[in-house]
Length: 295
Length: 152
Image (cartoon, each protein chain N blue to C red):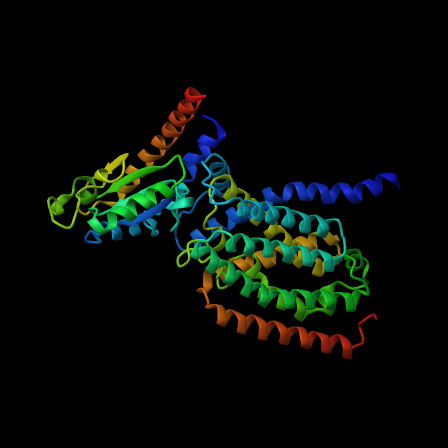
C-alpha cells in the first residue's frame, strides 16, 4: 500500500524531470522531419540541446532587469503548470497557470522598449484571446462529463473522453499550433517579419532559458491532448493509448506546420474562434442530448 | 574540448547582412540554405536578429549610409562572435573600389575574421569559410576568458 502511494508521486516526478529532454528530442525530430520533407539533410535530432548549451556559453546582453524577471517567471510558471498536470491537480487551475505563463511572456515583450517586442507581445495577446476561451470551455465540458475538475476524475471515468468529447478534441487540435508556436499560427514570433517577437531582446543564457521553457510547454500541450484517451483499449494499457494520441497530435502538428503558410492576426482570430466555438457548441449539444453529462 | 565548445561548434546561428552590393552573393548565400547545399546540417540557423547570432555573414561593399547600421549590428551581437566577409566586394571592395558612395571593404568598418573571395562566390566556398569561422569562434572565447582571468 505504502509502495503504491510512493509510485503515484514517483512516476510524475520522473516524467517531469525527463520532460525537457523528451521535449528537446521531439523538437529535434520535428526539424529533421521538416528537412526531409523539403528534401534537405537537416540537422541532427539532438540539435536543440546543442543550441541551448551554446546559448548558455554566450555573453548575455542585458537591456533591463524587468524582462529577465518576466523570462524567469515564464519558465517557472510553465514548469509549475506541467507539474500540476502531471500530479493530477485541479484542471482549471492548471490551465489558468498555463495561461499565466503566456501573460509573463507578453509582459516580457512589453518591457523591452523594442518595437519588435511590442509587436510580438500584442500578437501574443491576440493569440491568447483566440485560444484561451476554447481551452477553458473544453475544461468545462470535461467537468460536465466527468463530474469534477480534478484530473483524477478523467482517469476514473467509465469511458475515455474521446467517446464523449470528440469535437472538443478537434477544437484542441485547432488551437494546437498556437500553443506549440507553429505555422499557420506562429504569428507572435514570426521571425521573418518581426525578428522573434517577445524573445527579440533576449540573448545568451536567458534565451536558452526560454528555449527550455518551450520544451516544457510542448510536453504540457501533448500531455493535455493525451488526457483524452486515458483508458486501456483491448489489450493495451492506458498509457500506451495516451502516448499514441500524443504521437498523433505531434504528427498532425508537423504536417500542418509544413503544409500551411502563416496567417494574419485577424484571419487567425476569425478562423480559430469560429471553428473552435462551433465545434464546442456542437459537442455540448451532443452530450446534452445523449444525456452523458453529470451535474 | 568542453561540452560548451562542442555545442558552439555544432550550432552556429547566422545573421545575413547585405550592405549594398549587386545582390549576386546574396543569392548564392540563399542557395546554401536550399536543399542542394543545405548548411542546416551543420546546425546553422538563419536568424534575422543580431542578439541571437554567432556568425555575421556580410555581403557587398559597405556603402556610406550602411556604415553606421553595420557597426550597430556588430555591437549588438553577444560574444563570442565572428564576421565572415562573403565575396570579393566585401573582402577588398572589388569593382566598387574608390567609388564615392562606398567606404570599400568590410574590414574598414568592423573587424573581419574570415575572407571568402569570389565573384560570385561559390556556395562551396561559403560553407568552407563558415566551417573555418567555427574554429575561430572557440579560439575567440578562450582568448576572452584568459583576458578576463588576467584582469581579475
